[in-house]
Image (tube, rainbow, N blue to C red; front, side, top):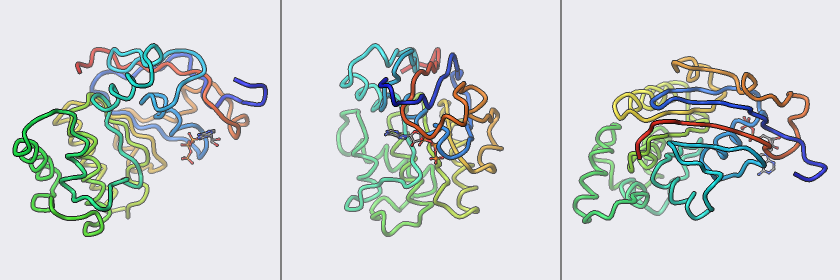
Length: 229
Ligand SMILES: Nc1ncnc2c1ncn2[C@@H]1O[C@H](COP(=O)(O)OP(=O)(O)OP(=O)(O)O)[C@@H](O)[C@H]1O
């Protein structure tokens, strides 16, 4: 870390159990998105270690982290990030890591779309779908490889309250059905309040709020033990 940088996160130890559903709240700039970037290996901590599903992310190179993320971590974002020129089905298929015959891939994707209430919508482009429907496609894309861990950054942040409630139910319901660990960061207290474990990032981050407006994470240790890949 250079002399001007101030830590965003300083987490001596933090652990999420396999299959746990955790919501993390906290003020803007408190490092919620940064935490998910660290857990997913998109960003490196300056020191310390992060273990996800038995894989120490800090001990593998970037290419291996990318491959690990593709198969083991699903990521849902506030603004969906669907490819506009691809149909709902294609947006999901493009994320599949298994090399199955096209017909089989289509059967799997259509099954997922059906499960999230989008049966018959596979041929629609994102622009032909409502925002809630687009988020459902994004959730399917995140889950299609059956990752043991799903991360969601403000998944209801751009939805009206009713749709937000539906997406909250969907995420929590799917985590029970499919048994994945779910970590959500959010301002949405309605969403957070529905989680079995709900905490403020300030409860496990030792950086004081006054020091937050600077940059970079300094240390994080997140473990998800016992998950099978
Ligand atoms: N790529 C980056 N490079 C440098 N600093 C960054 C970067 N991304 C975020 N930061 C800084 O890290 C701090 C935490 O940002 P982060 O986005 O994690 O907070 P947040 O709690 O998710 O905020 P919000 O709720 O507003 O999305 C902020 O001070 C931000 O300016």
